[in-house]
Image 1 (tube, helix red, strand yellow):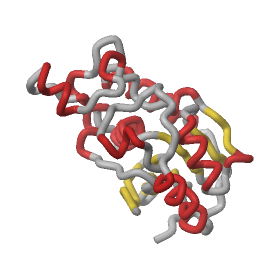
Image 2 (cartoon, one colour; image 1 turned 90 degrees about the horizontal axis):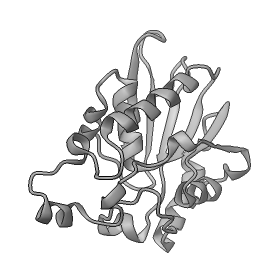
Image 3 (spheres, helix red, strand yellow; image 1 turned 30 degrees about the horizontal axis):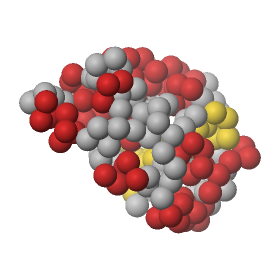
Length: 193
């Protein structure tokens, strides 16, 4: 279903060893697996229909590689504010391991020691949204799960913690847009594989 209004295509990077095992991957540059690279290549066909006025990527190697393998690397602008959540002391650790030491912990509620809170990530998402609304036309973004989930929540006017309710698989495509006019932001499609 196409829209008369600009759409924002969100692409989560392809699989890495850490995404497969559930390790929190913020600033660590973990490469795509062979499965992740194959899925990134398949994105080219899935993204061949729309025309994009801008292509933005997180600075992470996994997002940039996904962007390149999908055929958009040469036109991509790297934006630091699209970086994944800074997990601080929880970088490289699974939720299960964190919960063993800190029962009841929830990323979107509690944030990470020496890392970011949901409000911190929400502030970056708000800056991205402000920039999105300055572009005439549809935009393609390559980034990581938790950042994109917060971006979707903020797009809808929800608090950053609302991102906890959106799940994203690797190499998935989601689309933000509008309903009746530019004052009605909506999610048009979510987590399409």
